[in-house]
Amino acid sequence: MKTIEQYIQDVRSNVSNFVGCSPEQALVYATETVVENTLGARKLQRSETIDFIDEVCMNENIDTPALDITPSRSKYIATADISQHSVCLRRARSSVPTILHEIAHLTVGLEQHGILFRDELIRLTRKYIGVEYSSLLFHLMSGAGLEMSPWQAS
Image (cartoon, rainbow, N blue to C red; front, side, top):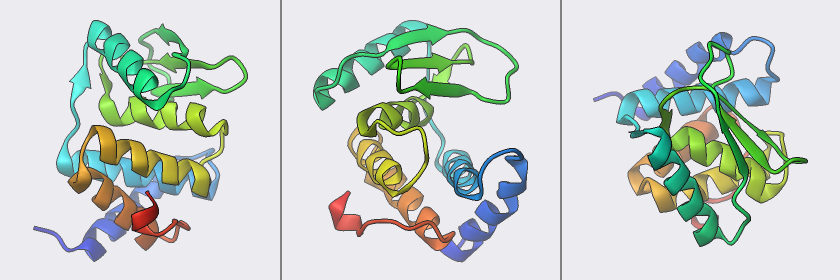
């Protein structure tokens, strides 16, 4: 098994895959990629996706977003539109972490990937995926230089 430092190096190596992103956004995406590749991620069919989003939104006491599932070859696998309270998924099967990423944007009301977003993402992954997943995500984000609230706060 790799050390945390080796995973952090994988994150830094993956940042270059996210051209056109801010450095902060590229680090978030690279971290998510490394965690998903390391621990895996459940991919949901369309009907499962709708049910999962409904469940998360009900549990989090937020309105269910308008949802557009339109498979395409876009480099963006998903987007959240805060002003329209909507989520667009561009893969026939979306992963749970991707869905939670977009819901985190909606719950904090921010399109950026700053500390409030990251804290919410950690909280959601901890609740809906598990401690192991969220812990690795947290430690890699922190180790890659992204500001994080203390683990206990998530």
